[in-house]
Every structure is written in structure tokens, then in C-alpha cells.
Amino acid sequence: MMLSIVIPVHNEEDSVKKTVTDIIAELDKAHIKNEIIIIDDNSIDSTPKVIADLTSGYPNIKSIRRNSLKGFGGAIREGLMHVNGDVVATVMGDLSDDPRDIVRYFRKIEEGYDCVFGSRFIKGSVVKDYPGLKLLINRVANNFVRILFWVKPNDLTNGFKMYKTEVINAIQPLQALYFNITIEIPLKAIVRGFSYTQIPISWYGRKSGVSKLGIRQMGRKYLFTVLYIWLEKMLLKDEVNKFAKEQW
Ligand SMILES: Nc1nc2c(ncn2[C@@H]2O[C@H](COP(=O)(O)OP(=O)(O)OP(=O)(O)O)[C@@H](O)[C@H]2O)c(=O)[nH]1
Ligand SMILES: [Mg+2]
Image 1 (cartoon, rainbow, N blue to C red):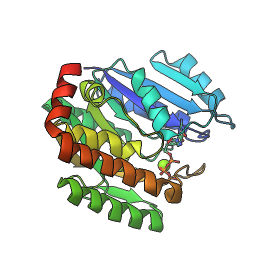
Image 2 (cartoon, rainbow, N blue to C red; image 1 turned 120 degrees about the vertical axis):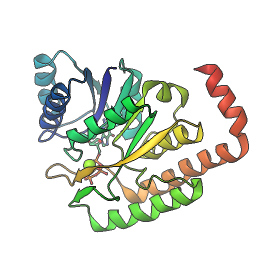
Image 3 (spheres, helix red, strand yellow; image 1 turned 180 degrees about the vertical axis):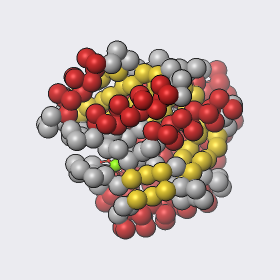
């Protein structure tokens, strides 16, 4: 099985090279065939140059540059459209995710799960430098989602996840343009009946660059996404499943 890694970046000149080279080193060590797809939205620092150097050194790295800051969700969706692997992981470009967790995710896919979700809030996880207010909002939001959908995963808003590519195909069309895609993809996969598991992961707060997540602006978008998928689950369950199976 080949693994595609989708990495969205915007102004990550200090992090993108290490993010990519560490991932490739870890996957090569684990003998996992891979490709890397970087989606840069109009970075105005030296990120484009760093990416160009990377792509010239490694044939399995593709890069896509979009000419405006179109948003995290749009970048992820664009990256997913270019995936050639049987399995796909979305990984952040600011060194927050641990490449060893990508290998752990992949082993779970090999066991047969369709989706693997990481949690920073279960036994065995590591969280360093999570900003206090963000942490509070994260816990409230994730517990709300957990109760509404009555599911076990408790960190679904984290963007770092892995799916069989067939799952991504079956949950199209994706709607979210911004960070709300982090909840749209896993919830749609759960609602459509794909199997999933949750494992502990490590997460490290960014050491350079700036956060692009505006929690205030995003709150309503997250809520809308969660409620629309919940409605889909409550009202259209059978029709949606039948349609998804027929289409893909
Ligand atoms: N292509 C693209 N990438 C983006 C966009 N917004 C954020 N990113 C990237 O998505 C990843 C996650 O964004 P972050 O800014 O780290 O969001 P966050 O993790 O909530 O914020 P921190 O706590 O500061 O890490 C990083 O690699 C960003 O560079 C965007 O509009 N387009
Ligand atoms: Mg981050």
C-alpha cells in the first residue's frame, strides 16, 4: 500500500523542510512507500524557495502553489485531489506532529481500519506548549461533538489523521473551506459507517511562524459543519449511505 501525505503550508519557512525530510526518513525506515503533496497558499516568506529545493532533491515530493490565501480547507481538498496512494494522511507543516505517529497510524490501517484518529488527550499521548485558551475551547468543542455523535474519539478537531483513499472518495463533496475541514472529514467518515480507531499521539506547539487559526471567526463555521453532518445523520442516513456506495 502506498501512503500519500498531504501537507498544507502558509509561511512556514522555518518548519517545512524539517517536516518533510523527517517524515520521509521515518517512512523510508519503516519501508512504507510514500509520496508527499505540499500545498502552499501564497506564502510571502521563503517557503516557496524551500519547497522548490525540496522538490528538486526528492522525486516523490509534489508541490502545488495557489496564488491567494484561499484557506486551510481548500488547501487540504486540493491536496486530496492529487493523491495517488491507497492511504492518505493529512499532516501539519509546522512540526507539530510526530512522524513516528504516521507510522503508527499506517500500522492500524494495515490491521484493517478505514480511518485512524490521533488523540492528544488519552493515556500515552504527549502535548507540549498547547495555548491555554485554545486547549479549553478544544476540550469543550470535542466533548460536544463526542456527545452529539455518541462516539469515542475525543480529539476529532485535530488535523493530523489517516484514511484509506476510498474513504476520502466516498465522502465527497467536501464543503469546508477553512479549519472546519478538520471536523468535516472524520465526522462524514464516521456517519457513512467506515471503521475507525483512535491512538495516542504526540503534539508540539509551534516554535516559529504564526498561527493561522482564528478561533473567533472559526467557531460558527465549526458549529455549522457539525450540525449539518448531524442533520445528515439523523434525517438522511439510509439515503446518504446508499448514494455514497453507488457513487464510489
Ligand atoms: N495552504 C494553506 N495552508 C495553511 C492555511 N492556513 C494554515 N495552513 C497550514 O496548516 C497548518 C496548520 O495551521 P496552524 O497555523 O499551525 O494552525 P494551528 O495548529 O491551529 O495553530 P498553532 O497552534 O499556532 O500551531 C500549518 O502547516 C499552516 O502553515 C491556508 O490557508 N492555506
Ligand atoms: Mg499548528
